Image (tube, rainbow, N blue to C red; front, side, top):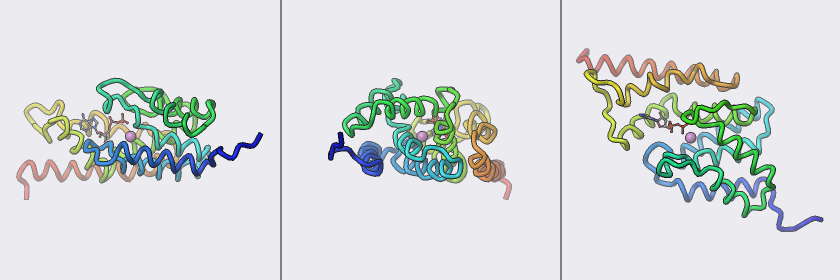
Length: 206
Ligand code: ADP
Ligand code: NI
């Protein structure tokens, strides 16, 4: 039976985008709306090149941070929130389950493996946003929001500069897709040259 109330894929994406926009506008720790928009943008471009399901990739990218434990007092609410958002849009259960699975495999901190090509792509796009000039801005935004020092040569653990070594400079090797690897290479080199300049200035070299 054909129901007139069934939304097109584009209408679903537009509606999800609006929900995310309302929820993440003005967020100051680097997980703001524009982070999510960039991840969507890059993920869709990679998905097109890699012949993945572009609709699923875009939907999961919009929703990849919605239930993040960092934004919900340490508790991951992805499944609950994603189900809530997609259910009212009459998205089929099967699609909702796929989106939840993709999102559960994306986060670096959860340490899960991305299995489907769609999860691999959203994970690559999320990681790419932690590299390059934007990644650089986000480290210090996030660090500042957690009262972390920029750098402390006497006790570097826990500083934002240390985060480059703990995570950011390892991301290049962890990219899943060919397209992701190529973008990561350039953004990685940018971070290395930033660090070089940082230490130069830190050490008072003119
Ligand atoms: P994910 O959401 O993929 O698990 P994170 O939330 O760990 O990724 O990272 C989100 C952003 O916050 C990234 O740009 C990352 O560099 C930054 N960030 C995460 N942890 C730290 C930290 N300990 N110090 C500084 N920046 C951090
Ligand atoms: Ni993210």
